[in-house]
Image 1 (cartoon, one colour):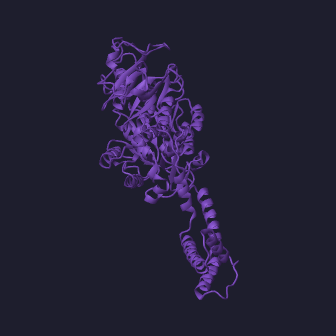
Image 2 (tube, helix red, strand yellow; image 1 turned 90 degrees about the vertical axis):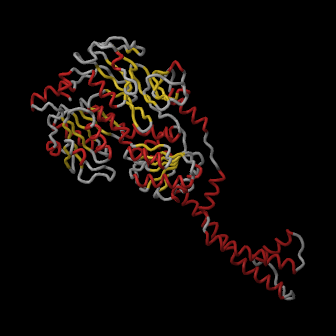
Image 3 (cartoon, helix red, strand yellow; image 1 turned 135 degrees about the vertical axis):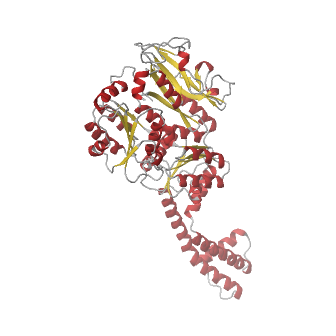
Length: 589
């Protein structure tokens, strides 16, 4: 998050709206509606269903969803209502019971569809929390201003840094600003000890109780004391790794692209005959010396020699063969040159030989996430070669503007990967929406180079983990699994400041307010801190803008205090329950 969140948000709380609506319809359960057509709609619905809250959940999808979306049968058995609508308009929302609903998530993969749906939803229920998925962040800022209570989120923006970091073997450039301070994620060895706010990992442990050592590879949350600290860390690692271009490799690829095999054989054969005939003629006519032999051969080949009626039959035959081969050689050389120039020009225009790199990133898939990853890599100064089977992929124009070569071909074929110089690349990042293509591309790449770093996108998190273990894939991630917790938290009106990817999961940085009569009201701060689940990093008193970053854990909390923490999703849910009074918790849960 780039903007610092305001602590004075002028809107009614979730609890207030629930109380009003419960009075209207007599149903104590809040109603959440999720609309989408790809993997995120299923993962978000599953996240809400597993949130531990007693809610009514309705999912709206078109009849035909993307192939990677699982069947909703298991969610139906748990009380989730699934309806189909080909168009998200007022009629569809009324059929779904949106009137009186608490929150609506619009996670269709098309920005314009989500915007139109948001406008229709406002006509059905004006007092509604909207969570809108937007790829275009500029459009997203404008959309957010249209609605009183709206969160605009980009799954591509959330997931891309994790893929970039995995490709470079570095830490995802996650940073956020809160209460006048910029916090960012780094490895312990890259920051000063007095800048560390919280240890995120210690060996294999996440959010540990105490550090078991000072391994420089452990992840920490650090405070930025200077300008662009996170970017400086990334730039330092890139400078250390360096970028080397191999001009000879590019020249060789260009030469191979320019030559025609059949034409090359013809030219070679004619040249062989010319050299043999010329050598024989020079020997029989008594010509001595290399230069004189070449001179006689070339003049005879182009038809400039005199007829030798008194020469020996063998010399005359050699002269005749040489003259005939010369007649054939000149057009063949001309044809070879023209053909080579034309082929080279076409190859350059189609990006087949432009930008042949070493130590580059091969990126497969230029959808929403792939396009964002490409932009981040080029911003960091990393060479990228992109592959997509669609010439009109979402990121095709962006690739052209950025000067990124785009190979339009099937990435699951080995020859496509070789065309992208997979043999000399730094890493392969596979981000298409087809799990089968992604896995096949990764395995083909490993067959070419068994030491290649592979970052793989897969939908199912369990499948991703098993693939990573079975095939020795460096990183396999599920975009929807990384982003769904943040979307769910936004629907539940939890103030999520940032999402930190750790391994295949995400930690949430959130601010939770202590309500009167809750378990935390009058309890020490240490009760909110639970190692391995939720760690407190700061707190602020009620009606105060000042944030205490070194609060004593024995300090007693009071109603209105705000606790800032880094937590797993279950840890955040538990803290919200602690900060909510039993009566209101019963209404929400």
